[in-house]
Length: 218
Image 1: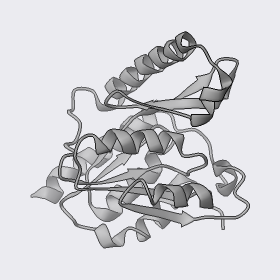
Image 2 (image 1 turned 180 degrees about the horizontal axis):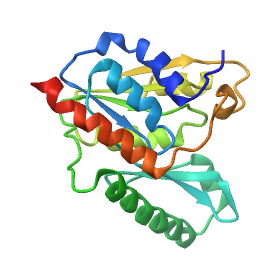
Image 3 (image 1 turned 90 degrees about the vertical axis):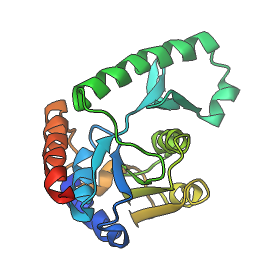
């Protein structure tokens, strides 16, 4: 099975989360920006509020595709254990982290504006991504969310590597991986359309979700 696009993936994932539909404790946090269409479909199906939770990869200088670690909203930093053996100077790591922290702040302002973030304490937080390969970004998000005392943390993705999905079961309260193909290779090959989502599209989807919250709550 392959998803036609992220919207389709979100619809498939939402069916795996129906046991949480109409639960007033549930909030959906998505890791922008490409993942927003997935999370939007989940939020609409569960009738739950949606917000952004930003994670930035710390790419190794000269080899940016290799993640030294990641940072997330709330000042959390998670490092790849393999980095210790590479003897990367601390100054290099700090320089990359500082740059990504600025980008993290920029995106929060861009996507949310003056709107305050959703309260996490005593809520059931569903963290949504479009897929999990190594899971470094999701791991940073889960750690950051845990620090805010949620009732439960759920990781939900349309597709994931079996090993990564299994690892997360020991780190959060519930893991939903709609598809766990073998061999996995990469997230993108399980989508017919894996094109990037623009900042404008992210903002539009968030605004659409937020505009529906008041009527639902009434």
